[in-house]
Structures are given as C-alpha cells and as structure tokens.
Length: 488
Image 1 (tube, helix red, strand yellow):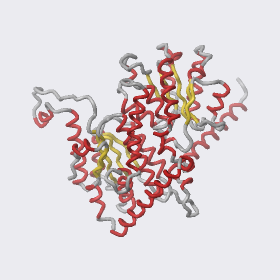
Image 2 (cartoon, rainbow, N blue to C red):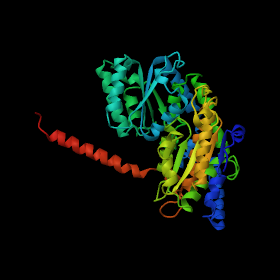
Image 3 (cartoon, rainbow, N blue to C red):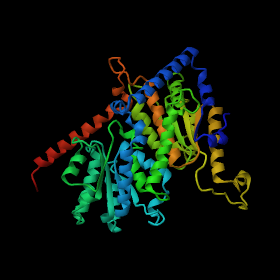
Image 4 (cartoon, rainbow, N blue to C red):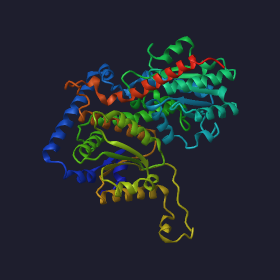
C-alpha cells in the first residue's frame, strides 16, 4: 500500500500521494488515451500561463481574476483597515450571505478560529468580536434565535452586520438583512446603517451599493470583477471576517501570512504541468482519468480532521463549476474518522463507483497525550501514551490502506500544519485543479465549437437561475393575492 509519508509532508507544505490510486485505474486506460491527456494538459498549462502574461484585464474578462487575489494591495489594505475599525467599535460581527458569499468565510472560521470562539471572553479572543453567520435560508428559526440572543444580552446595539452579495439582490441574503435592520430600528437604533458593512459590486447594478449612496454604511468592500462567489474566499468576501476574528495576531499579520500560502499555490500552478510540486494539474489528471475512463461517478472528499465546512466549500466549488453538459463527479463531503462510521461500509461494500481524496494534516495543533494507567484491556491499551495526532494519522493510514486493498482508488493531500498559510495553499490548489478539470471537459468551448475563455462554463452556474426566478415569481403571485384580499 502507498504510505502517507510524514517526512515528505514536512519537506513540502502540500504533498500529493496518488500513485496507488492511478495504478488502480491504469489498466482501464489505453496508452493512446494517456498520451492524449498529457498533450491536453500541456496545452491547458500553456493557455493559463499566457493568460497570466496577458495581464489583469484579461483575467477579469475570463472570470479568473481570483488567481491574482494575493496581489490586490488596495483591496487587502481596505480589508485590514475596516477590520481594525470594526474590532474597535463592535463586539459582534454577523456575516449575512449564501453560497460563495458565505462558505469561504465559514470554512476559514471553522478550521482556524477557536472552536468555541464566541464563548471566550473578549480578552481570550484577543479583542476580536463574536462572529455569527446567517442569510443562507428563508427559514427564520436561527435568524430569529440569533437576534433574540443578541438583544437579550444587550449586544444588538454593539453588532456589526456584514452583508455579502455581489449583485446586492440575492433573495435569502437581502431578506435576512432587512429583518436585522427592522429589529435594530424596533430597538431604537435609528442609525442602523452605521452598523452595516456591505461587501458587494461597486456599480449601480448593486442594490447594496445604491443603498450606501442613499444612507452611508459603516463601511464598504468590493467583490472584485472577475471573481465569482465560489472562488472568492481570498478576496474581501472571505478575508474581512477572517481579519476581524484574529485572536492571536494582528489582523494585518493574519491576512499577510495566509495570503503567502495563496501566493505559494499560485507559484506552483505556473510550474510545468507535470512538475511534482504542481499538485493542481496532478489532481485534475486523476479526476479526469477516473471519471472518463474508469467510469467513476462520485468523489469522497474526506478532510481527516474535525472541520466540516471544508467539505461543504469543496462540494460547491466542484459541483457548481464542472458539473456541466451532463458531466462531472458528484462530491460527497465527509471528515475522518467521524465519516468512517457513516459511509465507509458503503464505499467498500456498495457499488465501486467512487474515488476518495483524503486531506491530511501533519500538525493539528495542541499536543494531547492519551493517558496511561487506565486499566483498559484488550487492543485499546495500545492507545495509551500515544499523542492523539499520532492515532489520527494511524486511522487515516488504515482507512486509505483498506480502500486501496479493496480496489477503491484513494489518494491523499498532506498539509504541513492546520493554519492560515496551509489552508489558503490548499484551497487555492483545489480551485486551480477545478479550473484545469473544467478545461479538460471542454467547458471553455462554446456551443458553436469555438474556444471562448470568457464564456468558460466553469465560472457560471446557469442552472441555479431557475429556482431564483421561480421563487421571485411565486413571491410576486403571493403579493398579488395578499393585495387582492379585503382587509378583515
């Protein structure tokens, strides 16, 4: 079996072990198809390299400006400055968004902030506000519960609301924002706008932009042109909440350190496509071989840590980007070893239509040793005296070995440490891999058979528009029925 090498991970901040997974599908792919795929990967690499050399306007037009998020000094400075102001003025931050306007920031908070951030004292949080997320549903239960909690604790008047929507017209988000505004006004907060920060498009097409012109908010941050929601975590969309919740370092230092990981991923992406450090292209190659030739339909994305949001984020990233024209793997997000007790049996004993990608962390943080002298007998006694990190590693290795032994293609991405640098490195690498997979699926070829990077379906999600239009139409109908009903 293919061992996960800690030595390799220590020498390299991100390392992919995919040889065993490729070996399992190699017999299903003829040499001609392998050669064709390598030729296509080389061509895609040339296209993306030329695009970078063409300059930022080209990246904006092709909806790939997110590849330069680490260089956007003006946006980064605006994030840090506003984060400092919010930390000084407020005790709570409520992030209101859905989809890409929500999942990136949630993932950063879930993986990198203290798991009980809001229960810590302000001093223990390093002066950071509490943080809550809402605006991703019309179900009012959690929104009302949050507002009741903040008001009962006397915190509503000390709350900053970050509304995130590029168009400023996202139904779930704006509905939640309006409910929060109304609660503030009802509580006597006539200066409600001075409690709002909008992260939105800086054009008159954005409702939030126009609202700010009429009644200035506490602050405004841009959703940059050419940066789609699911590719926006390293833009002000995700950076602002990440900066606000900095607990052990200054917001500027936290952002700078994380973006250096993003920059490292960018450097690797421009290496030759078959370079060992160019993990993005190697991932895309494995995914494509598995889907197109091994006829696999599902990818299990197993973050081997106690962070659930990374799987949610990757599910949206992959499925909204490359599930187009009837193609694209289904993503099943899980975490290990928790997920082993819910889906592992099905992966081994069910239909062999899956591949598995493990995300494994060499250093999960605080060292915790399992106590000795417990008098527990049987095999459990072997856990005594071991670091929990070591047992977590053993569990990951055992799971991967089990899959490979049973013919399930499994690969691992090993990161050096669970921190901002490595998480940004990982997430950017996954975004790059998805971009390459989209090109392998010819998503930049339009319906007339012509290459058109500006219309690459990887960065669209037209399938989402039906539910949005239907929801608005139903709301319009209900309004008409309500207006036509005589008052009692």
